[in-house]
Length: 108
Image 1 (tube, one colour):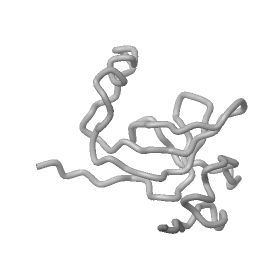
Image 2: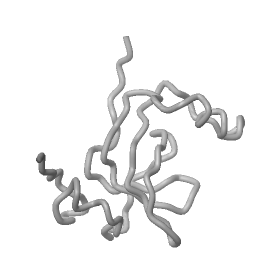
Image 3: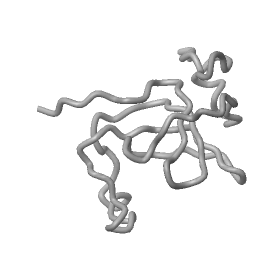
C-alpha cells in the first residue's frame, strides 16, 4: 500500500525547480497518474520517480498560461509573495491572501 504525504497544499503557490514557471496547486495525485506516453516524453536522465506525489498546477510563465503536471521533487515553494494571473483561478479559488489562494468553487 502506498503511503505518501503531499508536501504542498491546494491553493499553494509553487515554482518549478529547473524551469521558469510558477503555479497554484489545484489537484494532487499520490503517485504518478498520467499516461506512459507523457512519461516517456521526458528525457530519461530527467525522469522523476513515479512513486511520489504529482501536482496539477494552474501555471504561468512570461509567455503563457497553462496546466502543468509536476513531480514533487521538481517543485519548491514560491517565496515571491506575488499572485498568479492564470485566467482559470477564479473558477476554483478565492482572492489571493497571505501568500495562497483559498479553495472556493461553486457547484451548479
